[in-house]
Image (cartoon, rainbow, N blue to C red; front, side, top):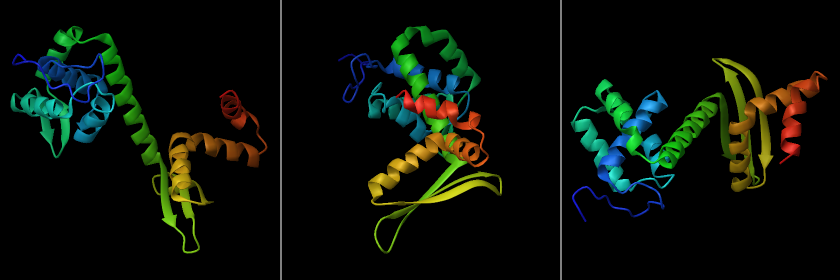
Amino acid sequence: MNDNTAFSAGVRFGGLTDRTEIKILVCYLLTNAKQPLTSQQIIDTLIGQQLVNYFELQDALSHLASQNIITEEYGVYSITEEGKDISRQLEKALPFSVKERAYKAVIEILQYESLKRQNKTAITPLENGGYNLNCTISDNDFTLFSFNLHMPDEKSAKLAEENFIKYGQDIFKCVLGITTENPAMYKDFLEKFGRQ
């Protein structure tokens, strides 16, 4: 193993096993996310896609921060101008499939977290058995839409919670369309699910 060969445990075929490439990928990710990322978001993106080894990623983050290529404050990483320059100059060294998987994964994570802030949920165990799932969409302090569902078990409550987080706005439009007798508000959503 040469000095630049990274550990490959947990890395899928086509992932990165070169330490320099891992650092370039971190710079690419932070540049193209266009916002600071938490340590967990970076881990969920790159480890979740099995693009790099966990320990190599931690080492890359530490090294890049020590070189002031990225900055870290309270577990949140930002890219410096120097880091953006490195990303632009060297991103061609990365395989296209790696860049594409990393970019798609981070965008999905950021979109999901944005939806989670808008489409709030709470799961509460009930004394008589089962679980209550509260789903709410609010605009600042004003509640636009809220309902409770009784779910038979925690697994089904968590599944319904995930679906509300992903589709809360669509569910709201469907209910509003039905209650106001406006089928145009829910037709596309129902057709989309009918095709699946």
